[in-house]
Every structure is written in C-alpha cells, then in structure tokens.
Image (cartoon, rainbow, N blue to C red; front, side):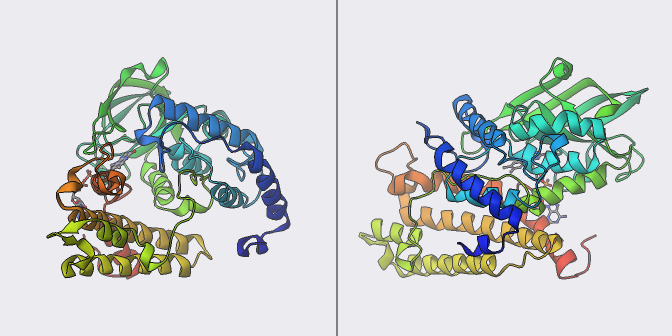
Length: 412
Ligand SMILES: Cc1cc2nc3c(=O)[nH]c(=O)nc-3n(C[C@H](O)[C@H](O)[C@H](O)COP(=O)(O)OP(=O)(O)OC[C@H]3O[C@@H](n4cnc5c(N)ncnc54)[C@H](O)[C@@H]3O)c2cc1C
C-alpha cells in the first residue's frame, strides 16, 4: 500500500480499488499523434475527438466529478476526486480537454448558480459534452480585471451583451463561456455581474469567435466580439453587482484552490522512467551533447555555472513541493501561488539556458532531424512566456504574495 493509500478513508479505499481495476483495462491506446501534455488549447479536431472520448469514458465510469452531488451529474462521493486523480496519473491516462470547464466553470457554477441552472449545466460539463471557455480578459483589462468594459444591459428579464473579450483559450471549441461583464459604469467593483453565455448555439449567433495565432505559430487563443447577444436573466450567477465576488471563486480555482478537487489526468506521454540523478539533469545532458567553441559545452565554465544554477533551483522547487503543507485550503492556495511563480519562471530560464547551450542549432525546430534534443527547447522557450502571464502575471503573483502572505504594504 502506498503512503497516500494508507491515509484513505474506507470510502476512498474502496474507490481506489475500483479505479485501479477499471483503469487496468480501460485506458485508451496512445494516439497516432504526439500526445498533448497540458490543456487542449492547441488541439486539432483529431486531438479533440480522442481526448473527448476519454473524458466521456472516464466520466461514465465515475472518475470525473466524483465529489459533485448526483443531481448535478456527479458521483456523490466525498474527497474521492483526489483518489481518482492519483490513480489516473499512475495509469498514465490522456489529458481531459475540458479543463476550463472542470477546473473553473464547474466550481463557480456549483457555488453561485441557481438550482435549476446547476442541474442544466453541470452534467454536460462534467461529461465533456459541452466545453467551456473563460471570458474575462479584454484588450484594456487583464491584470486589472475589474476594468472590464463588456456591457450587459438589462431589458426586463433579458440582458443584451456588447463588447470584446480576448486571449480566450479553447473558445474555438467551446459551447459556453463564463463571462464577467459590466452592468453599472459608475462603480468599478460593484458594477460587475457574472453570466454564463452560449457562444455556439443559435442563440449565440451574435458572438463572433476569431482565432489568434500565438508566438509559437500555434492556434489556441481567440477573441470574441459580442454584438447584441440576448440572454435570459436565468443565466446570471449570483446577484447583479456581485460579479467581482463570483470572479474571485473562479480565480481561486484557476490559481490552485481546485487542484485537489478538479478532475485531472495527463500521465500519458511522460517518459517511462525519468532519471532524477544529477547526471540525468536534462540541461547537463544537453551540455554534454552540444559543442561550444569546438569543445563539449559542459567544459565551458560559463555554461557549467548556468546549468548548476538551474539545477539548484530545480532541487529547491522539488523540496518546496515535498514539504508543502496542504492541511487547509488557504495553505494550499498559498502553495499554489508560490509554485506557479517558481515553476513558470524556472521553465522560462531553463529553456533560455538550453538555447544558449545549443547555440545556432537552437534555431532548429522539432521537425528538423538535426535539432538537438529532438528540437524541444525552441518551442519550450517560446511557450514559456505564456505560462508566466496566464492566470496572473509573475508581477501580480509577487504583489499578491507580498501583500497577503508577507503582509507588506499594499501597492495601491
Ligand atoms: C497562455 C494564456 C492563456 C490565457 N487564457 C485566457 C483565457 O482563457 N481567458 C481569459 O480571460 N484570459 C486569458 N489569458 C489572458 C491573461 O489572463 C492576461 O494576459 C493576464 O491577466 C495579463 O493581462 P494583460 O495581457 O492585459 O497584461 P497587462 O495587465 O496589461 O500587463 C502588462 C504588464 O504590466 C504588468 N503589470 C500590470 N499591472 C501591474 C501591477 N499592478 N504591478 C506590477 N506589474 C503590473 C504585468 O505584469 C505585465 O508585465 C491568457 C493568457 C495567456 C498568456
């Protein structure tokens, strides 16, 4: 029995056994394409079909939404999603494409929607039948999210929505959007209201979804133009003017609060056995393979110094994860904030060092057979910038940590 299994409640223990048995025969064969390791943002239709079939199958088996009440399509269990997640990771299952729905929209709907709306939306969200996206950012509102200008105007028991959202991951596949809109221009925070809006149905025809190409050349981002979309008041979450508080529920889950309860999979594609020794440190191995000034790059003292600095940082992050306290939600949220900051900046700096080691061959992409390390570093470097921006930039994470954890003076 593993250390984690030893702490299982009787319900978790039974469920763990069930998950293990089911997963032993139901993990789909690896796809023909290179598996996606994170969200479905850069998925093609082929990827999407494969990952959606997996989400549906895991949902039908009770491994997705385990802890949501049965009337909302969940499994009605207690603290069992964590068990399913652990077992899915061990079984190296594919990722779930509906991460924005599962990780952010579902808990927000669960805590803030009216009863009928929960029953209507949650089952299809959990099964992956309907995918979701997050309509928060706008051209003039990102870090300062409360500045959103997309306006919802009340018309009896309807709302008329006009405005512009941007940087919306997976909107190209989504049926629904969680939307933060302005309903009163005279009050920055209390003038916001939260809605769920259809962006694909006949009703959503007043929304134009336009793809945006990322620095990596991949698709995934979108912008949406709302041109008089009319929705029922029944699609509002919580009270008019309470949108900021509802958005805090979404952000808390985006920034880690849901990591224990959100269905998570994604072991597929990980290396069979990772060498965790110093000799197996990827940057060190890369330096041994590449040349610099006609000598192996690991003989260059400047390169060596940088590789060792990255190794020390990696060890520090691992220790931080190992020693983290997860006794309460607040503690977990604090850990998740720190971890996001440390790990995204680490990945960015590690990829920069890798490109320095590779020198001119660092310009070769993963489609070139001469590219060192199968060409993974140029894409990793370009992608790394998105990670330090998404879900709150590094500067914003530092502000939050400074103000709320270290109790420093507020920035404004
Ligand atoms: C990969 C990725 C996925 C995303 N997916 C979504 C999505 O699905 N839905 C969605 O709504 N949005 C999404 N976003 C948008 C993301 O939330 C915003 O990009 C982010 O909040 C930053 O906002 P901004 O781009 O407007 O930059 P700005 O807020 O304009 O910031 C510009 C710079 O100023 C700095 N800055 C701003 N304010 C402060 C401050 N108070 N103190 C110190 N520095 C500050 C920032 O750190 C940054 O360096 C995504 C972004 C990325 C990169």
